[in-house]
Length: 370
Image 1 (cartoon, rainbow, N blue to C red):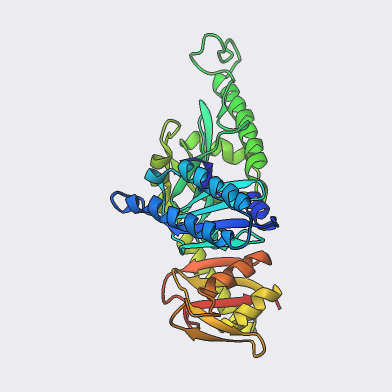
Image 2 (spheres, rainbow, N blue to C red):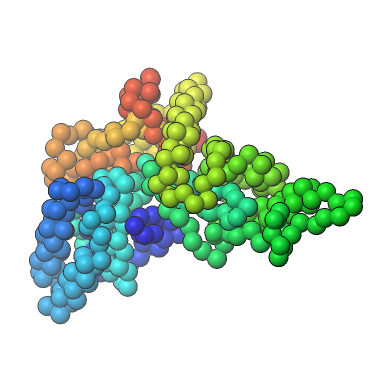
């Protein structure tokens, strides 16, 4: 599995800012295991056929065949044996992009002047985005995680080897002789190395308080803690030498700490809602959330996991009518997804909580900036 499993914020912004016609987005749920995944490429071909048939009513035969050939070629690059739970493909304006998502999406083919990126925005908001640094005085590794999916970072900065002196190395030994303390000298060299690790981290993951899991033996974690920058939000510090471990093994080690962090974040969000209720800066109304999120007034949106609702928006009355059938004409298939996307667009926060965690609101709540 490659980097197409993750769309970074700048890549997402590039997709969202594209304008032109036709820009094609194909989204579909996929399956991780045999035999269910045998049907996935067939369903994708059906969606490609839908795109071709619709374009045939609008564009010249030559233009239709060009887009169809792009999609057919892209289908051959999809790793159908190793998909996750959802697949989104973007084609148009020089872009050919495959995204594997560890959450399911609704099946659809969209042709428009913009790419349909809502699935990516909402999916990534539902997944915890974090980094794992594996400290070692051999080489330090960095991995990027979304949910339970972890990808090794291989760049000009990572993996970062240690090239200083060490015990037992005849070509680059620690200093010796009268008055010399090789352990102090060694630790100072390691501090210098971990300062380089810290600088490489800042260059790679930025300075906006990224979530970081630190893995390493106690001595390395202690030395790194002495020299590291303070902008990281440390999710957990885990003991162990994982320098040769697979991403799957590292993900398994990190999972309990990440689950504990998600639980703490949910509790903190509910406590923040309680404070907002006392000041009146909150709403439990879907219609108000829709309106406030579009206006940029949403500070924190709290949603029960997997909560979705379809509805019809009345622009004049600013009200929603909840409907049972999301396929009815004029119906927004998932109002919650739209509120999530608008909240994130205006730099609000979104936190997902377990069912029945939002008393006195039901299923979804919002705190307001003003």
